[in-house]
Length: 359
Length: 278
Image 1 (spheres, one colour):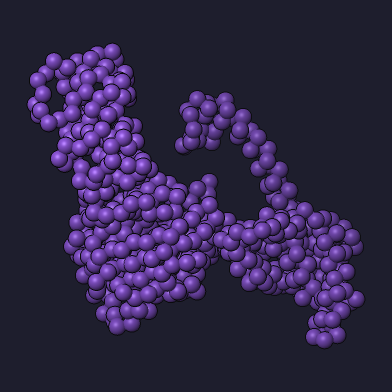
Image 2 (spheres, rainbow over the protein chains, first blue to last red):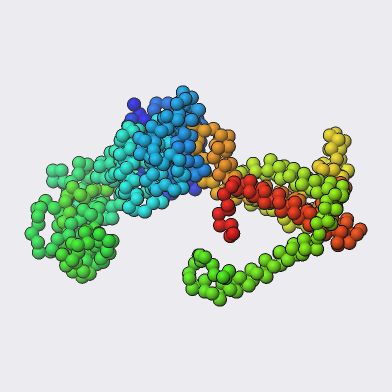
């Protein structure tokens, strides 16, 4: 069964648009919609939840067409930035509001339900607390318990972590992924942070300017960005312009500024075609220029260090190899390799870490 | 020592003793300016004169009328102003800023001017006053209805503006979440939006009440009789002089302040007002 089927959804809302958006989410699966701010991600979620009337298109949740239903009849659990707990009600009252929804007319034993639910989410001792005093983690649990109390068919999560610091974000991301698995509920999670994707995603859709520009299994999308915009959204720091020279078996040879790069790919690209090679900075391994190659199959480039940018535990190094190449490595390796502006260094890139973008 | 603040928001250097002292001197002048006349008003009274004036039927009727009319005005302002404030807070439409400016117009219209303008509309031959009297038997000239109309004109911006700011402070996403939990739009208003905006709404109603009970200019022109307390006090002042009038004035002040404090207390619950500076 399909948890969510969005077909040809179009809408204009002030500066935001949805342009022929189609998505399918299988039951008990999680889809992350990744895109920059202003791409229309929140509008998409709010339209699925029932707050904007689409100009065209259909929305079906669990096989039920909800396109014209008001929000209160769509059976979605909506989790918003900062979790949207009602500050004038206690945690238990917040959850009870979900349980007492009209659609749950049979929930006479709401009080018992709520106590059990709070225990399940590990917030039983916070039942009488005000949401204002909760930690972000407790807020997330309360928001999920409240949504769960209303027995939704689908969770919609609109950047719930966006306002949090990096440490809390990491913990909450992990916990959310666990809860979604335990609850066995399909979820659509919207974010502009590609770090969220690995923790949560089974499926990934990339959104740009109101359109879904690519979607599929997370690994597939990360391995095969369909355009430079997709590569930008996925956080590929290196997108090198080149020209296809030829194929050897399952590898494509691309010439980038006189250097031949071998790229593992299943899709063929015609010779002489102008393409881009997308490489994540963390997949550019830096070695001493005189070191013997550890893997003969790796692409090897020689260059000089142009800039060093320390990022705490990590450091970003920009090389000049005839073109700019950005590498990201552990800070402790910077000194070990003797990296400094002007220093010569070699870069090794596995053929499987370089991706072909055919515009 | 009073000049030492318990906390200082901002750089310590800006909170140097001289700056704080200078600010307290300015504040002291203002506080004296506010409190001295009010204290003086009570200082000249004796219990005897207050009781005597309180026993006068004219004065008692006028005070009761003022309180009744001001409460009714606040209710009418709430009835029309709160839904309108919600619209102004949530809806975007062409000419919204002009509409919002119209709401503020009464704040800038001199109250005698307001009274005359209202008289031309609600008077015996006015566009509303005429038909209302002919078809509904409702007169505004010389009636409680007229007093409420005059008070409403000068005091409704307080309710609309305070409620609008309160509604704007309610995150629309909370309303969205409530809807997805299965609540219809009216239930969301009743259970989420209005409770969250309640303090602001109540503050607006209290300000409308306070402004209404103190209104003189518009009321005296549109209605005159029956006399509200300010009109009664003015008449006593003209007829008997400042000493006679001051006893009634002190009485009105006590009642206004007592009700103002009571309403604020109700609006804010039993908890003290956060950051109230006390």
